Length: 158
Image (cartoon, rainbow, N blue to C red; front, side):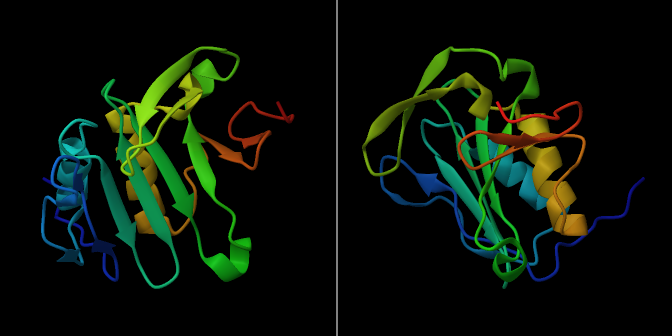
């Protein structure tokens, strides 16, 4: 049995209740990896919308979609990465032109490329890897900027 790992220095700030526009849980300091995975699982895009994890240098935002998938944005240490935002993408859908509808917490809605939405397992994998190592999970695909993708088997801008 694995011992429980604590994400020292990290804070879970939300998920946000869409109906009440308030956090659904209290702030959790130094959460365990189980608490992080459980918090991600509560984001359903209907009742709970967004989870933010942060430490003094970095933050991770996980948003749930109404389709049961997740959007993950990660800002590593701002000084090292010059405020770059990394978006986790589903590499199997990069060539797809399909869009999905997403309603944002401010009431606005937008159609986004389907490759921005990943499964719960992939979202949790990316979050846990970054919390444990401070690095992007190199086995996953990330978008930086409008057309630059990094990840396994990706050698060009799309």
